[in-house]
Image (cartoon, rainbow, N blue to C red; front, side, top):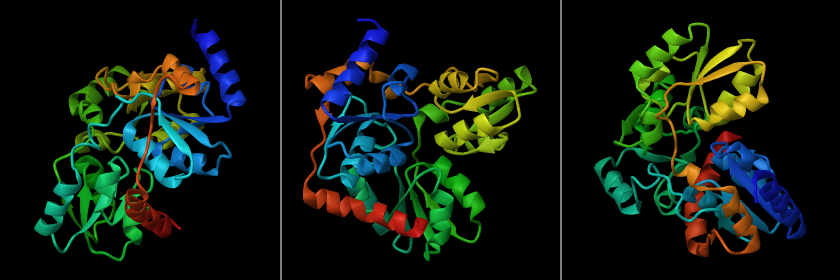
Amino acid sequence: MNTRELQDEIIRLKKEKDVCILAHAYQSQAIWEVADYVGDSYGLSVEASKAKNQTVIMCGVRFMAETCKMLSPDKRVILSNPMAGCPMADQYGRDDILKLREQYPDYTPVCYINTTAETKTVCDVTVTSSSAVKIIKNMPDKNILFIPDCNLGSWVADQIPDKNFQFVKGGCPTHMAMSVKSAEEAKAQHPDAELLVHPECLAGVTALADYVGSTTGILNYAKNSSAKEFIIGTEASIVEHLQYMCPEKRFYPLSVMCVCHNMKMTTLPDVLGCIQGTAGEEIKMSDELISSARKCIDRMIELGK
């Protein structure tokens, strides 16, 4: 089967079997085109919770499927490729956080959404890249232990100088692969282009940017900006998606190294196999784990209001 035939069969079967397909922004354009919802990890989980479908396929990585299950415990949630993980999410587990709590007893643990369900059970609040500044500003706590991305954490801390932050050594290997040198070279090569980067990038890279924000934020900024050229400092697939969205504009990757191989593991045949019941992995979590891990997500929702 070719791409079009695969897409047609996926669309036919998802309607027949009442399946909702979620695609993270870093998935391929071919997968975007068969998805019911495209976006950032938490936003996808919210959309899944609102959908009437009882079966949800997450085209993303494991922690995203876990979050989806936590917000939709009564639905079948299937991870499209069981091998698709997140190196950052696996950097600090439950026991690591308990040790950090002992090390920093006066600091409130705030975990990035890019963490496992087990890790979330021992943190107080979850944040996303788009909500982190607002959520932490609204917290009554003065001292914040930010886990695990020290780049995102430092970027947030710069915008909230009245709070004290402690960081751990962690972050996204894909975004950390983009160096200040690469950013400077890209700006020199494309002097009329605006530089848009994700806050998971190194501080030296975000300092050079015209805009810093979440993946969805970068997409929206590029679509709405009057500028005609952009350097994209996040996962390389966003360059392709923006080329489809804004064919009259030009987009360049900050670095050829910014490729998330875990995201690239999911293919159209994987999605088709999930609907047919021959591929993917159903995410199963105990009621106790869901209840415990959801507390920090519920706290984020409360603070975000």
